[in-house]
Length: 466
Image 1: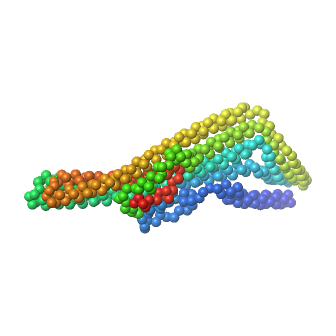
Image 2 (image 1 turned 60 degrees about the horizontal axis):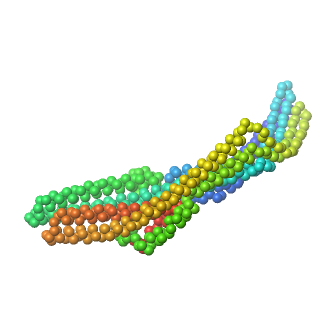
Image 3 (image 1 turned 180 degrees about the vertical axis):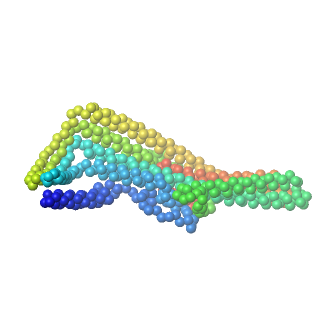
């Protein structure tokens, strides 16, 4: 019976010790001892709770962008990847701390002999020719790369949100323009019919006006469908069902062309300077550079892994068998020298060096792509700015021409064909003006993304250009 009591007491002590260890482990796992996430940038695109979208008021561009970054699953995915890599930095950094383990065993033999052993072991790596430092540097560079990739994903989603916002606004404006054209065609039809009834117009005038009116009705129906599709795409981008209606703020009433002084400042800067600035800011290139540095560090780690290591070891053991207790402790230095491991270190080094070349080539490819992106976005923005200026003049002249043709026809001095041609030209000018504004807004956003600094502030409307 005493032996059984001793065994029971021993098991109770072991259980209590395990509970303490588990509690300490839980606290460690729930915290960030090395503060690996302290340098991560938190925001709406991160792992923070997002409020439900409020649709009881019109959304402006900033609201659409914030809701997109908050609710889109891609942002949560890249944020989780960043946190996972931050944890890997902590795993690597743990190699600088000693390893301590406890062991306990208890046995009960028949006819009554009991045996128990308690042990405490310590191992502390003192020197490894830089393997730990290289692995830690690699993990940190990968964290930089993953964080930059997160920024790149956010910029891509930002641009998509901007495109959906302006495309929805443009679709609504196109519908309004189609309604205006339909009303004008209806008015022309009424005038032609009245003149036909009075005998001052031919049946051809009435039929031509009827055909034009039917065409504008068809255009209005098509434009209405385009609005519904654009609104569905916008709702989907915001993480909502496509059937949910989202109201946007009205675009600023702008009929004037953009001023040369305000909109051409950017074009005065050298394209070479713009490309170099983009290479300093673009998150995808920063990610590629960090990945290359990680590969260089991994190559250093592979070389160090084939070299000796020096460790400090210590142990303390206590055993009790058949009532006899013994105690032993030890401390010393351990030298481990790898002599032959089947040429594995050689091929690990070769693989690491080949990986360096791969990462270097990828970085160079992205550097060239950045230059092409900036050049293309730069030219598109110049073209869009010039088109916006030209369509403003086109719309003014088309409106004057339509008013003159309709006035002449009402006065009996013109023909219906001139009225219909003027109205068709005016309708086309309205659509070109809307498309020019859309292209200009999207081109601005695309250029900002190509430069690596796409923000809501970079897309604020130029008041002097309105």
